[in-house]
Image 1: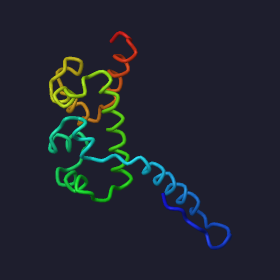
Image 2 (image 1 turned 60 degrees about the horizontal axis):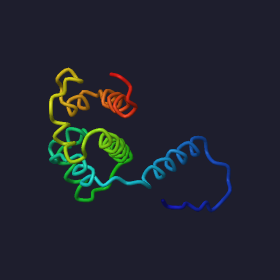
Image 3 (image 1 turned 180 degrees about the horizontal axis):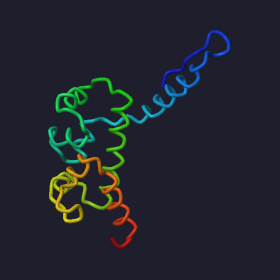
Image 4 (image 1 turned 30 degrees about the vertical axis):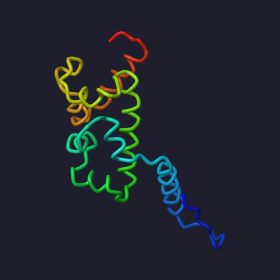
Amino acid sequence: MALVKHATRRPAKKGFRAAHAFRAAAEASAEVAVVPKDLRTGFGLKRETFSRLANFSPRKLAQLEAGARQTPATKQRLAELERLRAALSEVVKAETLGEWMETPNPSFEGLKPLEVVERGQIDRLWRMYHQLSSGEPG
Protein backbone atom coordinates (compact mmCIF):
# COMPACT_ATOMS: atom_id res chain seq x y z
CA MET A 1 0.00 0.00 0.00
CA ALA A 2 1.44 3.36 -1.00
CA LEU A 3 1.73 6.13 1.52
CA VAL A 4 0.60 9.60 0.49
CA LYS A 5 2.25 12.66 2.01
CA HIS A 6 0.25 15.85 2.19
CA ALA A 7 2.30 18.96 1.48
CA THR A 8 -0.04 21.33 3.27
CA ARG A 9 -2.70 21.22 5.90
CA ARG A 10 -5.31 23.19 3.98
CA PRO A 11 -8.92 22.18 4.60
CA ALA A 12 -10.00 19.46 2.22
CA LYS A 13 -12.47 20.25 -0.50
CA LYS A 14 -15.92 18.76 -0.19
CA GLY A 15 -15.87 15.19 -1.48
CA PHE A 16 -12.10 14.82 -1.13
CA ARG A 17 -12.32 12.94 2.16
CA ALA A 18 -14.90 10.52 0.78
CA ALA A 19 -12.78 9.86 -2.31
CA HIS A 20 -9.69 9.42 -0.13
CA ALA A 21 -11.55 6.99 2.15
CA PHE A 22 -12.72 4.99 -0.88
CA ARG A 23 -9.16 4.82 -2.24
CA ALA A 24 -7.82 3.75 1.17
CA ALA A 25 -10.45 0.99 1.42
CA ALA A 26 -9.62 -0.22 -2.08
CA GLU A 27 -5.91 -0.27 -1.28
CA ALA A 28 -6.55 -2.14 1.97
CA SER A 29 -8.53 -4.83 0.15
CA ALA A 30 -5.71 -5.06 -2.39
CA GLU A 31 -3.28 -6.11 0.34
CA VAL A 32 -4.55 -9.68 0.09
CA ALA A 33 -4.26 -10.24 -3.64
CA VAL A 34 -5.72 -13.41 -5.11
CA VAL A 35 -3.73 -14.91 -7.96
CA PRO A 36 -6.32 -15.82 -10.63
CA LYS A 37 -4.52 -18.91 -11.92
CA ASP A 38 -4.02 -20.26 -8.40
CA LEU A 39 -7.69 -19.70 -7.64
CA ARG A 40 -8.76 -21.39 -10.86
CA THR A 41 -6.57 -24.42 -10.20
CA GLY A 42 -7.80 -24.46 -6.59
CA PHE A 43 -11.31 -24.90 -7.95
CA GLY A 44 -9.99 -27.53 -10.37
CA LEU A 45 -11.60 -25.80 -13.35
CA LYS A 46 -10.47 -25.15 -16.89
CA ARG A 47 -10.05 -21.52 -17.91
CA GLU A 48 -13.32 -21.36 -19.88
CA THR A 49 -15.35 -22.88 -17.04
CA PHE A 50 -13.72 -20.68 -14.41
CA SER A 51 -14.40 -17.60 -16.52
CA ARG A 52 -18.11 -18.48 -16.30
CA LEU A 53 -17.87 -18.85 -12.53
CA ALA A 54 -16.03 -15.53 -12.15
CA ASN A 55 -18.21 -13.80 -14.74
CA PHE A 56 -15.13 -12.75 -16.71
CA SER A 57 -14.66 -13.25 -20.42
CA PRO A 58 -12.12 -15.97 -21.25
CA ARG A 59 -9.94 -13.24 -22.76
CA LYS A 60 -10.04 -11.12 -19.58
CA LEU A 61 -9.21 -14.17 -17.47
CA ALA A 62 -6.24 -14.98 -19.71
CA GLN A 63 -5.02 -11.39 -19.34
CA LEU A 64 -5.42 -11.54 -15.55
CA GLU A 65 -3.53 -14.81 -15.41
CA ALA A 66 -0.77 -13.21 -17.48
CA GLY A 67 -0.44 -10.47 -14.88
CA ALA A 68 -2.75 -7.71 -16.10
CA ARG A 69 -3.70 -5.04 -13.56
CA GLN A 70 -6.75 -5.93 -11.48
CA THR A 71 -9.46 -3.33 -10.98
CA PRO A 72 -10.99 -3.01 -7.50
CA ALA A 73 -14.12 -4.83 -8.76
CA THR A 74 -11.99 -7.67 -10.15
CA LYS A 75 -10.05 -7.94 -6.88
CA GLN A 76 -13.32 -8.07 -4.96
CA ARG A 77 -14.77 -10.80 -7.18
CA LEU A 78 -11.62 -12.90 -6.91
CA ALA A 79 -11.58 -12.46 -3.12
CA GLU A 80 -15.25 -13.54 -2.93
CA LEU A 81 -14.51 -16.63 -4.99
CA GLU A 82 -11.47 -17.46 -2.86
CA ARG A 83 -13.67 -17.35 0.26
CA LEU A 84 -16.19 -19.62 -1.47
CA ARG A 85 -13.46 -22.05 -2.58
CA ALA A 86 -12.01 -22.22 0.93
CA ALA A 87 -15.43 -22.81 2.48
CA LEU A 88 -16.51 -25.44 -0.05
CA SER A 89 -13.20 -27.25 0.43
CA GLU A 90 -14.27 -27.90 4.01
CA VAL A 91 -17.35 -29.87 2.91
CA VAL A 92 -16.31 -31.14 -0.56
CA LYS A 93 -12.98 -32.87 -1.14
CA ALA A 94 -10.69 -30.21 -2.62
CA GLU A 95 -9.49 -32.52 -5.40
CA THR A 96 -13.09 -33.12 -6.55
CA LEU A 97 -14.33 -29.53 -6.23
CA GLY A 98 -14.20 -28.84 -9.99
CA GLU A 99 -16.13 -32.00 -10.77
CA TRP A 100 -18.68 -31.13 -8.06
CA MET A 101 -19.16 -27.63 -9.52
CA GLU A 102 -19.99 -29.15 -12.92
CA THR A 103 -22.29 -31.97 -11.74
CA PRO A 104 -26.09 -31.54 -11.55
CA ASN A 105 -27.10 -31.47 -7.89
CA PRO A 106 -30.53 -32.45 -6.55
CA SER A 107 -30.12 -29.85 -3.77
CA PHE A 108 -30.25 -27.18 -6.49
CA GLU A 109 -33.21 -28.68 -8.44
CA GLY A 110 -30.81 -30.49 -10.75
CA LEU A 111 -28.73 -27.41 -11.57
CA LYS A 112 -24.96 -27.59 -11.45
CA PRO A 113 -23.47 -25.43 -8.66
CA LEU A 114 -21.70 -23.49 -11.44
CA GLU A 115 -25.09 -22.70 -12.99
CA VAL A 116 -26.44 -21.60 -9.60
CA VAL A 117 -23.60 -19.06 -9.37
CA GLU A 118 -24.12 -17.95 -12.98
CA ARG A 119 -27.77 -17.26 -12.18
CA GLY A 120 -26.70 -14.90 -9.39
CA GLN A 121 -27.79 -17.27 -6.64
CA ILE A 122 -24.45 -17.85 -4.91
CA ASP A 123 -26.25 -17.45 -1.59
CA ARG A 124 -27.72 -20.91 -2.16
CA LEU A 125 -24.21 -22.38 -2.07
CA TRP A 126 -23.45 -20.45 1.11
CA ARG A 127 -26.67 -21.77 2.71
CA MET A 128 -25.71 -25.32 1.74
CA TYR A 129 -22.22 -24.80 3.16
CA HIS A 130 -23.66 -23.47 6.43
CA GLN A 131 -26.06 -26.41 6.75
CA LEU A 132 -23.35 -28.99 6.08
CA SER A 133 -20.71 -27.38 8.28
CA SER A 134 -23.06 -26.77 11.22
CA GLY A 135 -24.84 -30.12 11.05
CA GLU A 136 -28.15 -28.27 10.67
CA PRO A 137 -30.76 -30.42 8.95
CA GLY A 138 -31.55 -29.31 5.39
